[in-house]
Image (cartoon, rainbow, N blue to C red; front, side, top):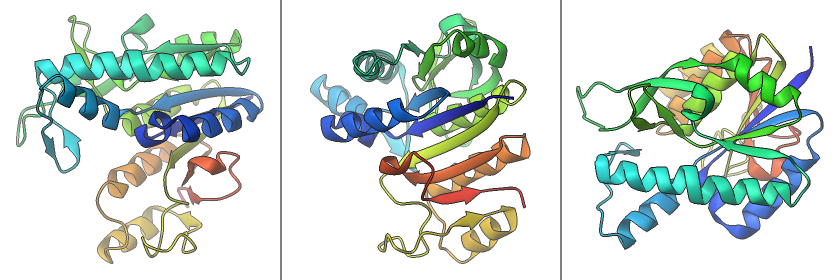
Length: 257
């Protein structure tokens, strides 16, 4: 079975020209099949402010009312996604920008409003891995924006880490999957202020202990939960690392043993 490398990269990386250029240079050098999943939250917040639309967050998650849904659709599916696609084409990577609605690749449902009403936020129900595999086998590099749909005409804002994890799981029948969550830190850190304290390996038991000890907290908790679910579902490896290390040489490897 051939390898597929899925890179998930946070909005901060893709929104700065210098870090985006380095990321895409490194991404272009990854051998074989590959795929990119991106965020774009800071750009969405900035453009919402310019349009006079208030950004509301709860525990780091965006409340997506109808006005904010318009903004994130424009920013994620348009501005950020197409900028990445154009820059990959400049590097001779034949990329195709997609939301979950395109070719019906990701269906989701609107999150229940209890205990918090997040608005037009989607939780993934189904990923069409076979359709994505057809694209990849034909030499296309998918670039996924963090938007899905509910097959009732509604786009839904969907967490990019979740999309990366669900897509990785759906692709396991077709490829050996290497999934990388890339962000600003060198990996999962023992001391969040010291980049030299990368924890090289975490399994489910380690995760529980590190959460109990308060070493893993905040947004890192759902990120590692996604990673553990992915390896449980057959993803070969998940690595959490810096966006400058997408060759897999550094970072924290998540496994199920």
